[in-house]
Length: 193
Image 1 (cartoon, rainbow, N blue to C red):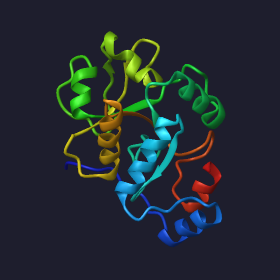
Image 2: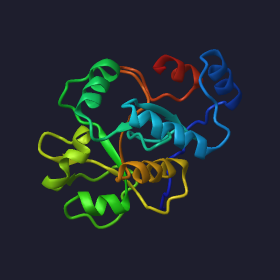
Image 3: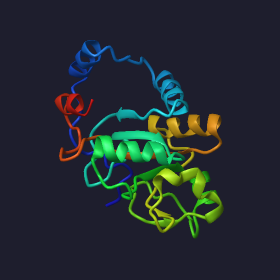
Image 4: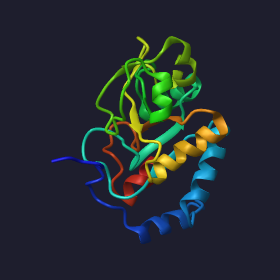
């Protein structure tokens, strides 16, 4: 059996999501391109985004279905997410999500996409500043690597970030707060919000 996507969990109730957006004055996007454009603007300001798309991931990793996404090149942002939202120790790393073409430039001994965040790689020393917010103290990372041609909105986000920033690499962590499970319902999103 082969999997191409681990979005095997529950789906969000679209009508409940729209109600949440209306109550909290959150912008509802009519298409992925508008959403991606606004996300890129948030990243340029140093702001993270909450990304909830399709069915929830099945398993222990945030794979772009219920994720908090931010710039990968900021230790300040990493520290703020660790302390304020995740309530974790400062040195606990987040994982990057990246396009295959960027993985080839950044990672040592890399050969093919690993979309499920299951392998660790050393980041080339010269490239570490560009992903500093996702590095372990030893210079390694456990990336989610998507094919450049991946048709998902998640990959479109990486391509848009690459177009404006030069690299299709972002910080990715699970959409939940400390001590809570991954956001699987609108109520979970409210708690994280």
